[in-house]
Length: 344
Image 1 (spheres, helix red, strand yellow):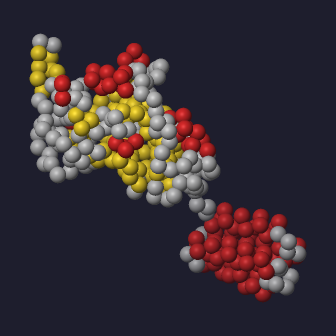
Image 2: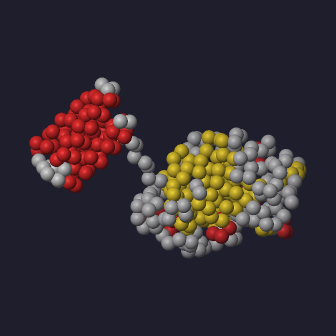
Image 3: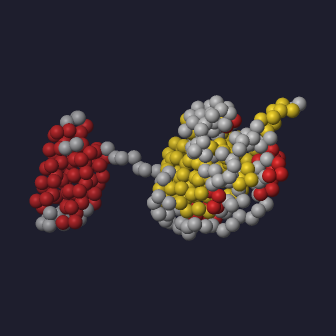
C-alpha cells in the first residue's frame, strides 16, 4: 500500500507514504520519542581492550545507550567522531554512487523521483529535540526486495554508506525503524524489519529500537568501509524510510604501510647490531646487507638477491655456534622476507 502526493494552496504536501515522508512528522516524532529512556546495552558485553580485539570477528556488539557506546568505543582504543557536514550540499543523491566528500551514499537503483532516494539533511537547533544544537541526519529509503521498482514508487532496495577507510564503530539515533508515521489515525503502523549490514555482520534494527525510535551503536569485530540498510515488509507497506540522526563513527586501526625492501634491510641491520651475536659476526652480516642495499639502489635486483643469499648461507653456517640459534632464526626469517619482497 502506497500513499499519494496531494497539493493545496501552499504547494505540494504529503498524505502518507513510506516513500514520501514529511519532515514535520519526523521532527514531531523526534520530539515525542526522545523523552523515552534508553535501555541498557544488549547482545554482547562491553569491549575492554584494543580496537576490535574484544568483539568476535564477523559479529557486532550492540548498544542502546550513547554514553555506554562511547565508553566502549574508547575502551577499544578508537575515537568516535561526528560526520562532518561542513560545506556539503544537502539533499537527496543524484547518482548511484553519490560522493559527498567525507563519505559516499550508494544505491542499487537510482529513482527518477529524487525524493525516493536517500540523502542527507540538517534539522536546525530550534526543531531538534534530541539534544541542544543542530541535528544532522541521513535519510534512507528502501523497498521490499520482492517488489518491482516502477515509477513513482521506484526506490532502491539496498542503501549503502561507504566510508573512505574501514570503520570499527557506527552509532546514531534512529527514527521510524519498522513503523510508518504521518498516516493519520492508523499511525504508527508496523511496516517490517530493517536490517543493518556492517560489512558481513548484520543486525535487525527493530530488535534494538522496538518502538521505532532510539539510539543504536555498533562496534564491529571486523572493520568495514560499507554499512548498508535493507527492508523486508511484514504488513501492507512495501517501502520504508528511516532517519539516522547525529551519526558518529570510529575509524578502524589503520593498517601500517608495507615497508620497502630497503626499509626492511634497515630494520634487519638494526636488529643484527643490537643482537647478542659477537660484534665481528654482526659486522660480517651487516656488510653483506649493505651490499644488497647498494644493489637495490642501483636497480640490480639479481645482485641484491645474491648478497642476501650470502647472508642466509653465513647465518646458517654460524647458527648454534658463534650466533645463538634464536638470533640466527630471526635473521634468516627477516632475510627471506626481504628476498620475497624482491621476488628472488
